[in-house]
Length: 252
Image 1 (cartoon, rainbow, N blue to C red):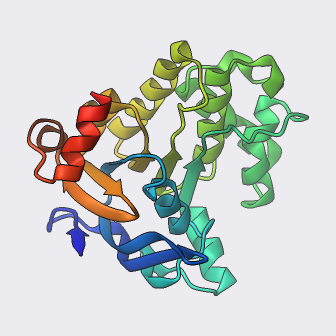
Image 2 (cartoon, rainbow, N blue to C red):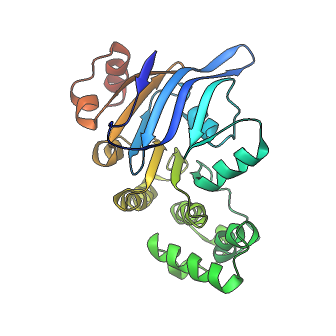
């Protein structure tokens, strides 16, 4: 068992205790212990199929864990749909694919959740959306449709849409993997700016530069387990586990 905790002086906002996840007989997550502090940026690395995406999908119940406990801001995930709704209001999620509604403008994509979930008046929701588009540096795209945008612009809209629900935790599931190389930096710049504001972030990514510069801790997973954890300096210069060293030799 590997236990990964935030610094003792920091209040954890996300906690996983002994979490297992099975797909049939296949164990996707095995005895995961992890806590993430308020304002912390945790980057999750590992080879394909190591359980990285399953881990964060379990945190907001896109996947149901089979054993163990997951709590977000003191709310334990269970089969109680009220708890699931509460946790989803606390978490924002950005996926590999942008999942924008193609028939809605950028502005309407971002205002949809505030208006429907929080019952925010249209003018307030649009004011919020424009502020977020300023934040992700594409306010001029507000009246366009997703199909009129580049991949990097669409992903920035997806980030703004997630922020519109005012989450306490943002999770990113390989948000640059579907982008052309020239568009990756613009998305990573937005994520780095977001981290700089003190947003709690859990990021699954293959972007090693982002992990080096932005992560407070790096978590390395393999075969459904947390193998090693440490600061970026430790992870990239002095990893202790053979599986970690093999992974780094293959990608660096």
